[in-house]
Image (cartoon, rainbow, N blue to C red):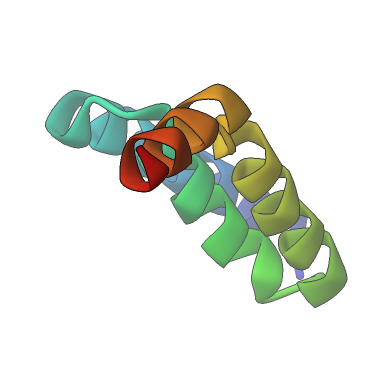
Length: 72
């Protein structure tokens, strides 16, 4: 891959991330796009990013509150 192609790819990725932040107003949308692009080259890194997103979105307090409401 030539240097100019890499630069064009980086510019495209930045544009897609900015559009996703504006349209979806979400960091998770831009992380998903980054993960999709990274998975084409390094699938294990993309899997790690997905794992981090899942760990980041876990909220044990809210989960416990739901369980307590269902039990009580």
